[in-house]
Amino acid sequence: MDTDAYVISELTQGMQLAMHLKSVLSSESSSESKHVLIQEIISSYDRALSMVNWGDSGGQTQPMLSRPESSVNIDESPRSQDVNQPFNYQQDEKVVCKKRKAMPTWRNQIRISTNNGLEGNSDDGYSWRKYGQKDILGSKFPRSYYRCTYQHTHNCMARKQVQRTDEDPTVFEIIYRGQHTCNPATKPSEKHESKQDNYQRPLPPKSADMLSNLKKNLRVSTSDLDATEPCSFSFPSASFGTAENYQQFNFSNETDNNFLQGSPSGSNYFVEWGNDPNLSGMISTTASATNSPLAFPADPQDLSQNFPFNNSGFFI
DNA sequence: AGGATTTGACCACT
DNA sequence: AGTGGTCAAATCCT
Figure 1 (cartoon, rainbow, N blue to C red):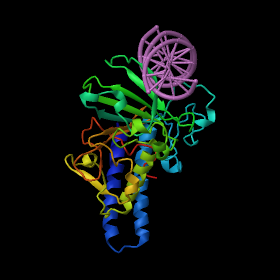
Figure 2 (cartoon, rainbow, N blue to C red; figure 1 turned 180 degrees about the vertical axis):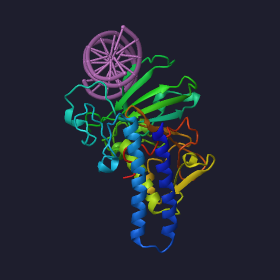
Figure 3 (cartoon, rainbow, N blue to C red; figure 1 turned 30 degrees about the vertical axis):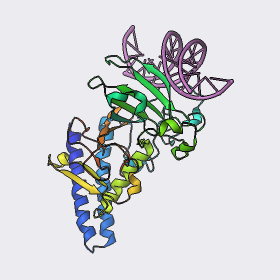
């Protein structure tokens, strides 16, 4: 479709502007020119995002620059009444809604060793309670449904689905839904500690954190390209014309990367926004770098061509 | 006894 | 009508 060409064009422009900005930053240019470049980059990405959103989402979304703060406040809007409501489940707790739409989700594929290949071992640092299991059409293995143990005490509506993959029974696909509103930092003192601590350090891809981290990281990447910290963010440059090489941005604020740290190498996080397949992409942690870099695989099958730039709010 | 899991039924969505 | 997500009673576990 033509939208694709526009999106690629805009993203390419954004990339070039970012490179330009990098050179400007290393020179003694005025701050004004830097701001102009940053604004150009933001505008370029915004236009690309707008095209994607308007072109592929039935016109339901708006250019993100016109929706300040919408990126971090993940809108769940199960009943589509107030799209500007922050992520908040508590307000209509009384209303029974057995199926929620447009919840931010993450897919995480985890390989479990055959010795202890139980679903429960795919621990992510949070405490979950199983509330259902369902045979899924076309799948050999049932899907298990979990919700946060602290749903009632902390009004935490985070959920996850765990399903063994047909292709490789040692691999579990975990789909996270919603963000934790409980405080994981307090968990070790709570009673589920013993079970949790047997496992590896977490990597709970907390939805809002993940999105905001990506946002922050990318923002840093355009303004601080000379950062020397080892953390890095990369994405395939195929969209920019070179299939083999990754364009890599560095960012320096390692606290922004806490959702990656401790992540098992090779974990694949597939990020989605609601049910829109266009608002999705895979994030994987790789074993090659020292500090759990975030990388988008070059395989186009793994990466929706619009991701991450089509998501509403990674950049501003 | 209290919390976690199982499982059949119900409901929303397509 | 079929499918998937959730509820809630029954059951299991500690």
